Amino acid sequence: MNWKNRVFGVIIFIWIIILSGSKPKKRLETKHEEYPNIILLMGDDHGWDEVGYNGHPFVKTPILDEMAKNGVRFDRFYAAHPNSSPTRASVLTGRHPNRYGTFAPGWSLRPEEITIAQILKDAGYTTAHFGKWHVGPVKKDSPTSPGAMGFNEWYSHDNFFDLNPVLSRNGESPKKVEGEGSAIIIDETIQFIEKSIQEAKPFFTVVWFGSPHEPYGGLPDDLALYENLPDSLAERKVTLTSNITGEQVVRPLKDVLQERYAEITAMDRAIGKLRHYLKENKLTDNTLVWYCGDNGSPPEVAHTGITFREEKGSLYEGGIRVPGIIEWPERIKKPASISSIAATSDILPTLADIINTPLPARPIDGVSLVPFLKKPTGQRKSPLFFWKMNPKSLYNGTLEPYIEPKLQQGTTPLLKKAAGKFTRDFTNFKYNTISINDFGGERSMMKNQYKLVIKGLFPDKEIFELYDIPNDPEETNNLVHDFPDIVREMRLAMHDWQESVLESLTGADY
Image: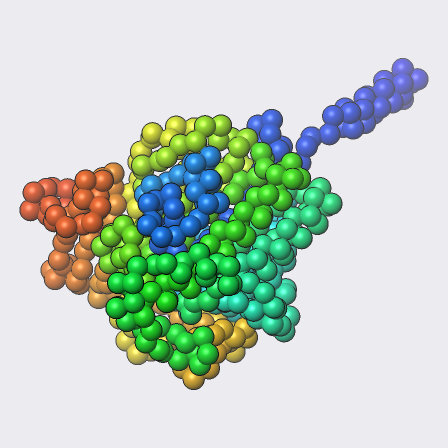
């Protein structure tokens, strides 16, 4: 090689080094913006009407009211299921919980599911879970613990918790913590955020409160706010859990609501402390804070505010419509209310869209809500599906565990006693063959203003109800005979979707 070629080669080599080092690409950059910090907040059994901004006559929620005033408020935000575990699973996966056997409270995730925590962790986020988990045990060796499902850290409970909760840190032996439950997990959240800032990483925190789930209890100052509830409420007696024995007890509704509303106010105050911390540390603008409930208010305390039909456990509005608010000042410049339907299964697709990362290669039931942040008056193009499947109808008495039962045993006690003990175990079973009998159970589909409710067994024993929700939110006027074509179209779409769900349940997505 002559000297000219040698010199040319050296020049090219030096030039490559200069180009590779002169302008390093920001790892956390998307479309000229850094990834936002993300905080998902969820109340436990917190129905749509139990906030001040939705007109509740008694409940005081100044912080949530301020969030609704400043950010985006979803007026028709829905839990993917009328019960806790399934809804939480939908948040994590963006998929309907029946796809992976999380049919009801106490049914776990499957380890093969891909969660939003895993997606964000792969994108460079540091991740943490605080509070109620309820989609598997939180112990270290659980294949569906927060750690196994993508969270770097967790300080969590298998189920719900109250004053002086027993929590597990990163799957270790649980310990009792003195204090108000919502305040405890918010303090832990703030400590985690501080550590994330020191590591110069964006943070993703899931904060699932134990409030206002029964058995109820509150701090003296919070209880004092609700001393003057109407005396007429004392005339009604309700059955719920005793804080002393963990067994069922009958109490006056007035006393029960005083404690429940005190819990809601304490949770609201804890959220206020978190927002204040973000503001003091100049984190507010680029932090997305999303609050919602996991299902409607339970029967013993429902119907004291706006009277939607039925309550927790039902696919009517009272069972699945919940508060839904997003604050993100950097992207939400003007307050807005959104009338379009949205659900907890939309959370994963929305966050994936924000950081410009692809969705998992499997059926995803949610859609990105980013378009609504840009145009709040828009309407959802795809329908929402709901399905309360009866798991006993699937297995015909042959139950093969999906996860070793020992790994499904819970360790964190709660105040409510069940099956003779204070801890909770989880279950999930294998499903191999799709049967025509498996299409039953209460189910519903929403598209634009219409909501179809189906009961009975497919194909010839079904009962249909059709409601125009914006004009009939209490679901009193059944339009099934007025719009038979709409009923037919929605019914067929529902059946096609059920086929997809059952195919997923067989494990085909893995």
